[in-house]
Every structure is written in structure tokens, then in C-alpha cells.
Image 1 (cartoon, one colour):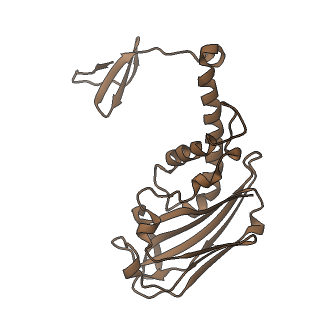
Image 2 (cartoon, rainbow, N blue to C red):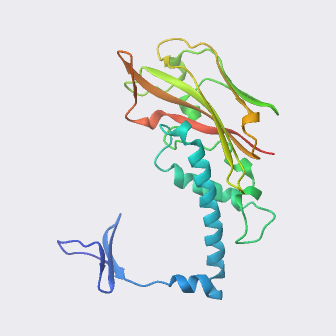
Image 3 (cartoon, rainbow, N blue to C red):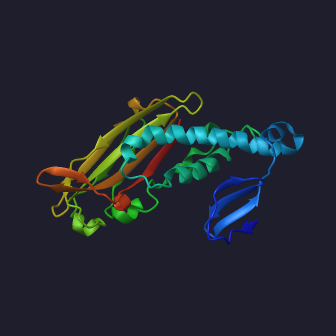
Length: 248
């Protein structure tokens, strides 16, 4: 590996060299690497093929989950959510006690490892919404209840926000077939200077028949001017997390 020192920096391939940029500057190296055919067929790369197969399974599951819950987190998720979820879901896959290397799947792993996963790495739910909330989980319903509170005392409010809303969602997945269901409850817009009424969300499990379930609770800040609602340009303070996970 060599560092480019010319006044003119290059990117891409020139002759037998590849030019690219890193955090350490513009670099150059010889092109090369192992061919795809060799990786897919050479016995020496058996472990690599196993890792690729499990990685592909993991990516498929993450895409299924993220696409399903997107309506609930479109203004909450941070730009790194996909990468963070890939890492966490791989931990689930690696706990598969049934299948051998290269054949492990998320469906057989410890789904509980997703509990508490934050959907915005820049805003932790417990650090943004500091009032206590109660979760009641029964065979038929998942319920999240928030007592009356004064937002100024219990929220970390971003500059410019005039209102906030809470939301709860439930999603269920058949990780083998890709079948999924999703339910979303969105609360009303609450002025940040007024004491709220008690807030309760109920997600009926009858609408979530698949085995692997996720239940989400979150908060979003808004600005309302002359009756017009605006999402905050900087969603860094919006927060949500997987509060309850279930595998039946």
C-alpha cells in the first residue's frame, strides 16, 4: 500500500493499480485478490463460503424487519440503523443451537437479544423520555401506558420543537417464509408546555400471528406553526426502541 503524494489525486483503476480514498488520505495499491470462482469452489475457502451463506441469511432477515417497521421509524431511525441491526441480528443467528456452521439461521437463534435495541443510536429512549411507562404483556395484547406528566420536566426537548407525539407498534415475522404483519398506533400531538393526559397504546396480538414478534415504543418531536405541522429538520432527538420481543 502506498500513499498518493501528487497534487492531482486519483480514484479508480489505472493499469495495474487501484486508487482510493481513506480517512488517512488518498492511497494506491496493486489490483488483485482471489477470484469469485475460487472462493465458491476451492476447499480452502470452505469457511469463507459458510460465512457468506450466514451473512446472506442475516441480511435477508434484517431487510425483512427494517422494511416492515419503516412506517413507525421513518423519522426516528439514524443513518447507521441498518449496519447496527445487521451486527445485532448476527448475534441472534450465531446462537442457533440446531444447525452447523454455514447453515445457522436467525429463526433458530435467541430472539431475546433484540430486546432494548435502540432505533436511533443518537438518542436513547430512556434518555429522551424520562418519565416511567408501564408495559403489560398478555397472550392477547401488548399495552404500553404513560402517566400524566409535564413535558418540560421529563423530556429532552430539541430547540424549536413545540409539540411531541408518542407511538407504539407491533410487528410479527415468519422468518422462514418472509410472511409479516405490522400494527401502528400513533398518539396525538401534545404541546410541550402543557401537562399531558394519561396515554395508553394497545397492540392486539391477533393482528400479529407470526411467531417472531417485536413491540416498539417511541417519541417524535414536531413544530407546529399557524396550524401547520412540520417535522424537525434534525431528527437527532427522536427515539424508539424494541421494548418487548417474543417468540412463540
